[in-house]
Image (cartoon, rainbow, N blue to C red; front, side, top):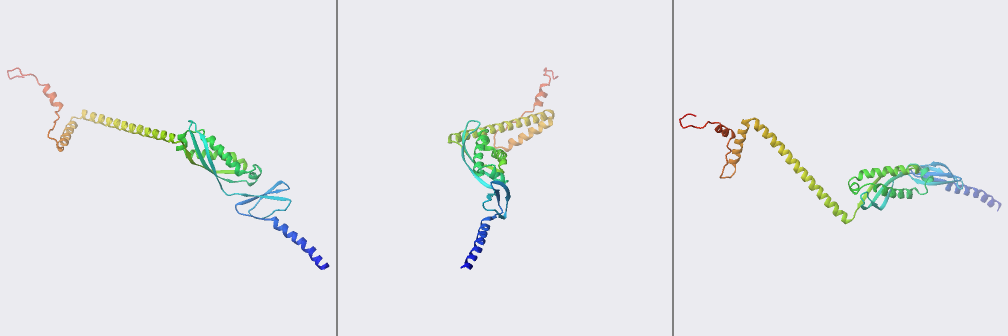
Length: 260
């Protein structure tokens, strides 16, 4: 009996030591960090690998350092031109400072999601509907920059913000379609008028050359005759040279005595 008691007294401390070591040893993965508090005060950030946390004296909080994806639910946004749209987006962010992510904010995931929603409404409300539809890349950059500035003190880095959908009413879709059609008509008229202007300029240049070079005018007559001759027409209109008219006009009248 005394032998059994002695063995029990020896095994009890050994078992307690094993239990303490079992609860004190933690394995931190490569993408994790452990924020360790000692008697309620921040002590250090440990990991990755095998770490030791003293029970009852130290507490460890695991923090995932990988990139997180948060889907921002659809938000009602009134654009600068007073159009109601529904916009949703997705935010990519990661924890850069595990200490601040635990100490500076209660729940950094919920805080980042709520901040992204308010930022989305405030930023898009400063732009018109056309900008939301056509300049998404610039809006994504502005959202990411503003969100990153506000979460920096939490140890959070917003790496990217992407607008997913911009939903508008059916009536606004018809208005946009009419606007796009009017824009296409306007561009077609501009292109047509520019073509007429260029054609008129070329005609003016050609007329200037023909006026200064009479032989060029004669060649133009011949070219026109060849074009008419190749057409299936029974009537040919022969252009009468203006220099012949001038020549006949300069002749003096006949007085009947054979002299001019």
